[in-house]
Image (cartoon, rainbow, N blue to C red; front, side):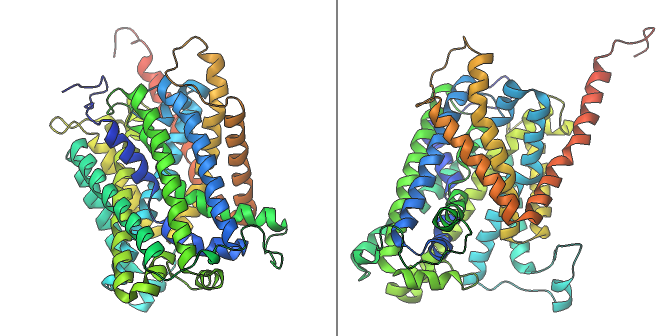
Length: 479
């Protein structure tokens, strides 16, 4: 079995790579976001158009990222790419952001939705009212403690599974990805055949003439607000790059997995949202948006299959979020492993388990911090923080294609970004707009997210100073 120079084992094939892309994207958003999008847009057709536009923009991002992944295939993915593009400081800030907010909060928030789904089937225990309402700064760490406790247990379990080997973690990922895709296909087939729905529900196809939008920018602002929800559902597509040292023939297989995975997910999202709209008229869908903790997919199945259908969807969401949490844990830990190899993270994170050949200390550090983030807030708080931070770096990564075309002009590129320079430029523009809108609409969570990113600066200077100290020659032969 081939071993990468980093000490990790190269044994994940193309099919697993594609399933990791799909698993990292399909989590909770596709089951929940149609209702708030309906409230924003007041048009069934525009909901589908938003999902299509978000899918195309995500595909643009994956096309751009594929060129870089084909050029540089190392553990750590985007961290390694940024090191080539902008130098070690910017790469470190990305890796630190993944640890402090982006990937750790993603793990925490998706696992939280898994626990919420379990709670809807098997009610989980609560602490006393006084304990659950206790506040620390802006956080209520013990609120909904039964759900948070199961979330932490889930993170610990899946961290342990990936500790035991990339094949074991990859097997869990593949199994749960196949199960959730089959489950979504079942929803689509049942909704379009036995639900009693109607294609006339997909109207108006474009803007509703009588709509009153909440945005000061009218329809444009409403479209953009709706797409924020869709982009959350598409998030995670670039996780595959973090496994560059464990994918076989990575310069070929990572780009192919990106194209294939993002394309398939876009098709799945369009079909399942069409199925939702086929069953639920727009007024019913809009009504769901004002109901706390109500999930669109559950209400769709409940309408024509009763409580049994609602139970089926709740279990499917458990499967989906459990698999996505596993895929994110598997991929993200490789970022901190790569940083530690460069001596820009806690040194022990560079450890490779002598038997399982996994970055086990990196997994433990990641799991511990993600568990603490679970106690910090709710699902919405976590996703707001991570989306703000992630799109800063998504845009910087796409802009890096222009940088590397100059810095690595003569390097062999197995894949080149289709539509260069227009496709990368469009993606960069979307990312910049998303960041600006998040700052305006949600300054508190954006501020917390930015603070967690900036905390990394003193850590960088501390680790950089240690590197320089280690590189100094001994004085008078005294080590």
